[in-house]
Length: 141
Picture (cartoon, rainbow, N blue to C red):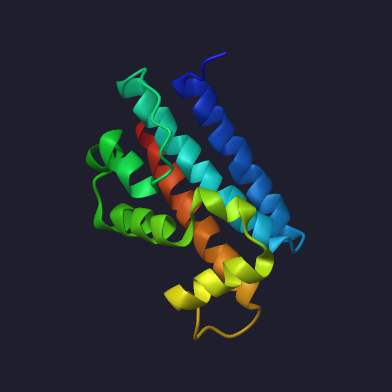
């Protein structure tokens, strides 16, 4: 069964809801992954509206560009969130252990100087990006 723009859009919203549930219950690593997946699904929804050709790449910044999302939701703030999400989330993170993912974030120096629970801060940053990207995308849908 081929996915449509609406099935990707529905998946994006479901994944975002699950990411929030995980975050609220302290499942920060899974919340982080699901937030990135939600963004990818949302960008794929926009891409599907433009073409029926499936692109198997998971690069969020490239998906945002090729889908026309950045032109539709043209703000510096959204571009910043896309770049942030693209840097912090990779589809191959699903294969990483918690330690490997933290090592990756250390290399980025992501949320390095923030106080409090590091995983909570990392997860919150990607979750906030997902809410911004998906919220703006929904507003323009």
